[in-house]
Amino acid sequence: MPPEQLRGKPTDFRSDIYSAGAVLYELATGRRPFPETHGPQLIDSILHEVPHPPSSLTRWVSEAFETIVLKCLEKEPERRYQSSAELGVDLQHLSTSTASQPTEIANDAKSKAKVCAEILAQKYMFVDNATSDSTCRVRSII
Image 1 (cartoon, rainbow, N blue to C red):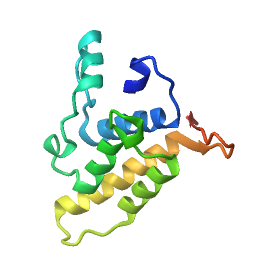
Image 2: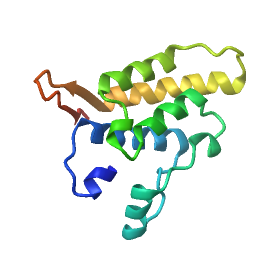
Image 3: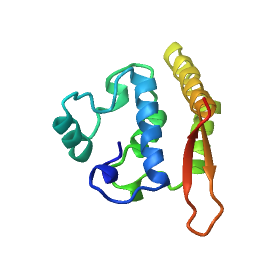
């Protein structure tokens, strides 16, 4: 649940981007961004803590992928991606970029980033509403 929702503030498409970041984080690390299981501690962590960098939890996470995930998980919506299209461009760029020094880890990271982008694309459809308020919804198409 995004921080603004926990604070009782209005949510918008950037709340969905936060949730997508949480999914990417878990896909990348096998762990939730905030692993607490007790409700009040979990809420406190979401509101005040920064998740451990994914690269500190698994060896394959590239700096670029980590930057994308952590930007999605920013506490303030203004600091997150401002559209699903913007997030999609960065994920697509990451999944098609080539490593400057091909290694087993770099190749593995590239393939896992591509898998993450494809899983999100298959599981979620990001639909930008072309109205003046420019809202966005993440709709499950499972």
